Image (cartoon, rainbow, N blue to C red; front, side):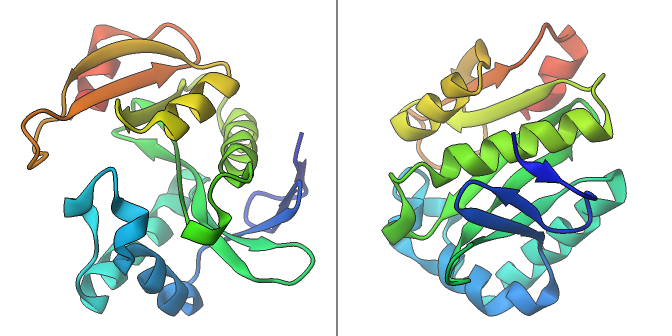
Length: 187
């Protein structure tokens, strides 16, 4: 279990220090979001301008108004930037687990550390709100993380708005959700 002193302060999760995103993270966040290797499962998500990353960062900052948002993840030993992730309230329906990692740090368990820390923080902020993971079916690594968290698949269907007409979206949750909650998570 991650150490949680205060949700707006740093969280230690395994080998990572997770700190709420800040505007100072913009250069690293842009490098991450502009890297095609980071978007191999959703190429259309790649950021092609600093302005797009700046807009996304503003949304990340706004998420903290709900008591929880995304963290910048850095190695505890060196401070090197690993990626971004955590948990945010999605459509007031569920906390949603998210992470995006630098290619050199993928496959080393960091996504699971971030996801576990996000789930623990969500339980502290509002344990009555379900936790979800929304992902593409062909992203086997993300499926594995959702399953390691004990989330279960509750929906499989087309990924509306994805330029790939064959893309399939999966929704995992930690408990039963209402039809209305599921509909909000689907879009």
